[in-house]
Image 1 (cartoon, rainbow, N blue to C red):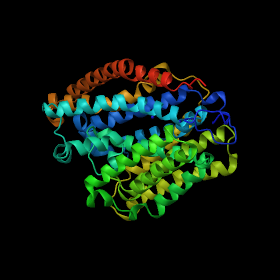
Image 2: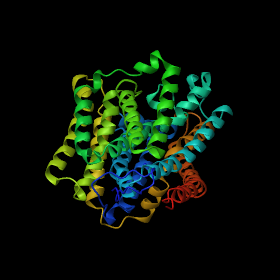
Image 3: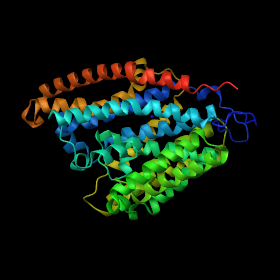
Length: 421
């Protein structure tokens, strides 16, 4: 799961190019070390979700001290923060950016969602949560915004939750770009981290969804669609209004309507903006020392916020803060080794990581249906099932990358080409 070009009076209306002129250096192109980190993160998340199905003893002993899933997704968040805004600024075109995002994310998102519904309907996978089946159309509308985890709607596939925070980040980056303050990513990261540490634990969960469940989803969808249409096709004034509308929407949902709570929601946004700030420091877009100082606040504050419950309650788990610390160390190690050659297997896993991430819960649910309770099987049999599951997952990811992801990416490139003037 990130510089504007020259703006001119004759530029097409759909292009958004803030002053002053900026150029992204060659290093902004797709980098193998980022693919390697994505591949590692995807496989760690697969391992996390295989524990209940195949390795419950690891779940019982390791999970209180290390949350493999949070480790993997925070590596993903750092990678997205590092590269996604750079992708937008390299184009300097909000319309092209959002065409690319929609066609990058939604086709496979829809495929995985439909497969999840089909497996649940046939009894192969776990039944869908009652709120999804009780309100199917409004739940589908929430998923269409990709903000369902911020709207009180269960995820059709459990890993969909992270896409809500990716989408929130894209909308905030869009607003900052439209307002011409996109260089302020280090400050934004520090503000989100401070908010997570100071007020995160006190923020309510599902405040709006609990009192206005259907209306909040309909209003969110309306602001989401109208705001992005204004961003992609409106005049300069409409672009700014649309971007600010979706930014306000996201900030409200993150702070008072998140399923995972305000602390972790704000920590995720802080982490992604910190990744952007590291990119800007590396490429000389912001001053190195103050930039790094603000970035350093993010892991310090977010880990402290996550560790506070463990320090004040003997029953609390250290899994979250330890995993976030490990994710930062992993990303910084990858950043330090970014000029080294990346193993081809790891880089390939990164290329298909979106497919790996979205499809693996479905494969594991099939395995769970076929094997039953893991404690009733010998370890050797469970390891054999794990090897079979990974083999099937890799084949499925290669197939969907080739036949869903790559064609949609090629289509996005064609649709994003500048219009003739």
